[in-house]
Length: 446
Ligand code: PA5
Image (tube, rainbow, N blue to C red; front, side, top):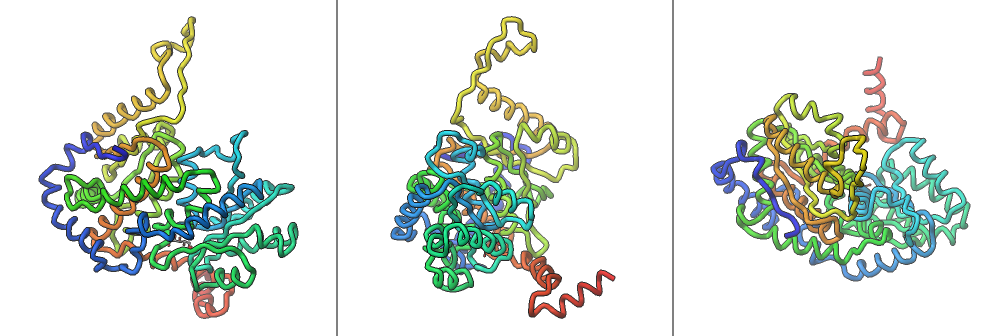
């Protein structure tokens, strides 16, 4: 079993009766999704993507990844939100958060730029690139997002100075809309190789498109296995039984808890390599559900690390929270705790034990503690950190998110709220067309 739910620590909060009561709504939401009859139905391309992806482009992604691997030491992926989180999450989860520090790897270092407007963040990556061969993948569906557009301008300038326009052309890869947008027309003019963000796939659902797949493939991850995992997950999600479909059941559980005033969900993992996956998950659920005055607030933590910072709040603070614990069953690595004949630190009760066993035991102890603290805990058991499992899990969360959003009666596929800060920023920066708003904002500052 790649992924399963363990509801033992939910017993006092979600009853079988609750599941029965909500199941009609869940099936309705699932039907809305599969019949493509709900709000945002123009953005359901991700639904059958694991089967109906562009095979020609997939082969081109693998070829480009090979070319990138051969021609650079540093691969810079420029994008923000859905245009970078999935790739970074997958690389850190499947390989390691220390990927760039691995001494013996046959793949380039990978840095993510254009996901903030920090001078230092960009300058640091530029410093890292000094004296090294660089390739760039600029990722933007709209092709107009300010953060990546600014970073791309900086890197394009660098590459053209370093390699000349022709040389830079061989090193710049653009992932964007198939026909429209500034980035697409610019890439065509410049002759960059381009990959497509399908029209009907929103940024936060795009990890299994070229958006995620190119950087993931450059990192040496098996993207065939990832798509296979996603396909098997898709088949499992198609089942129409809340007792035999983990995605439906997860969507049901979170809506039940939300209705019982559990308004914050914390995705918890006991592996630091899952930190960026948690960020990806937060965007997926936050942007999909947080609208119309509704939605569970998605937060995350890495335990046991954050038990030493957030543990007190979770155990004893306001009871508005539930935890979804990602339990990764197998560890990729083995660390045995050595024996100390003098037992100076009094840790000989752990001698010879595997560190992963101690981590798993810490999880069990925490589940009991947080249950005693009246925090509902759902455990999602994932077999391992393989490419296959990642694809399986990513699709599971996407499908559950869509069903959960429809159950909440929101459009899970738009993000109108994201525009507000952009308009204000453009106005304050003096962009043409924003003169009235600029005046209004400046007046408000008086
Ligand atoms: O999920 C989304 O739609 C957003 O997070 C976008 O991915 C993000 O704003 C970046 O947009 P774009 O790819 O158009 O640059």
